[in-house]
Image (tube, rainbow, N blue to C red; front, side):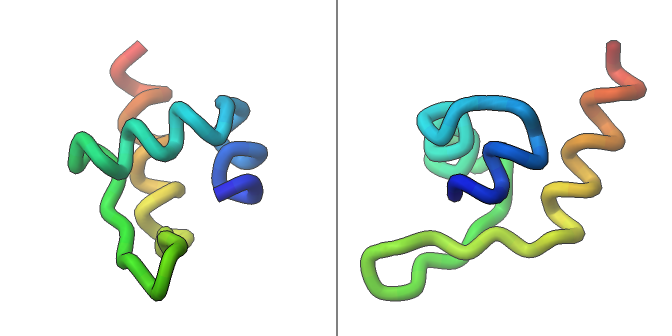
Length: 51
């Protein structure tokens, strides 16, 4: 999550909130979440164009 937060320039808590709200797709592996790089890229693209 720290790497995703760094790429998106938000806090880790924001990434967790996005995952839990279903806004950022992720897969739970054990006790942690895995976010696909394309999901991060897509979210950055839509947020950039949305304003």
